[in-house]
Image (tube, rainbow, N blue to C red; front, top):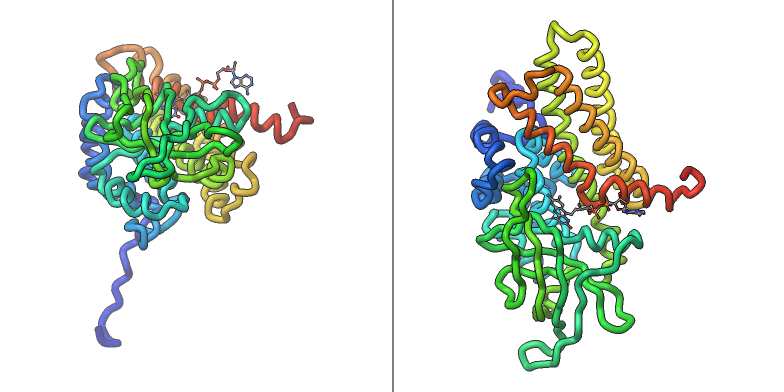
Length: 378
Ligand SMILES: Cc1cc2nc3c(=O)[nH]c(=O)nc-3n(C[C@H](O)[C@H](O)[C@H](O)COP(=O)(O)OP(=O)(O)OC[C@H]3O[C@@H](n4cnc5c(N)ncnc54)[C@H](O)[C@@H]3O)c2cc1C
């Protein structure tokens, strides 16, 4: 280009605009079946991978698109605007990717990151038991016994136990993270188990009232042999707090997306007819925007590593805003919200919203944690 050539301004790029038209259409066509019937669940992860979504917030040298947990969070939010089942499976996949990025086991990461980024394999997080264990609510449900040394594996373990809830257990193949009580006085470990391991048994999909396409099932472990190569971290108490900020921030993406979708619909319905509802919608939109800003700033400044309670409070506020948003959608829609023939996603969003407070760590668990941090405010 010469100096006299007209300067063309670069297109304005919204760094958080993640969904292309093809994916938008796919998600809106499949949102109801992903929620109610569980159809299309096997296609979901490859379809999200095709749109490059798992690579947001993953360093370039690890095969990603760069950015940080803000980008992953807002990509999950963008999907949640269309389907919470899709967003939750996305979160499971992306959380497992985050575990690999923070694991000292570089060989495990090098082996699995390409398979997870490409959507060839599904990643799942069976860590609700572990989070409750850290909070002193529950004991670990999986136990390790040192396996007899063999030439192939001189220092492995046998795992025994059960995970009652795990999402994104794709039938075509998955890898899942689990916290495991170690033998003797060794600290609890975090181990990756995958669907090819003998003794790892996936139940049928749980009979859920919604999110049925999220590939949610129980895992039973019967003498599953694992080795050092499967170790995500040798000490869950050290590892889990390092991954918790991204784990929770990305969960917030689900609330943000769902709240946005309900508020948008409420605004369309209320336009010109419900003046009292309209002003409430505006107030919740403003509160949501303020919470999103706080979340993204905190993640960018890495503030939540030291200030976990601030992130817990944001997750609670965002969950409450989501409940208010679907409530306003209901109020704006009125009686027709109850008519099958007038469904426009409202009934789905209503049950999707019921999931937000019980995602690990649930609001109950977070409130208990906050009381522990500030006992005087209890
Ligand atoms: C569709 C679906 C998918 C899921 N997928 C996954 C997954 O992929 N991975 C995963 O790990 N988990 C998963 N879960 C599990 C989920 O994370 C749990 O629902 C969550 O941990 C809530 O636990 P809970 O049922 O024990 O309820 P909680 O919210 O923990 O508690 C329920 C009740 O227990 C009591 N209680 C709890 N904590 C305390 C406390 N500190 N002090 C006093 N009382 C307390 C209270 O009475 C409370 O009302 C999934 C669940 C669902 C529904």
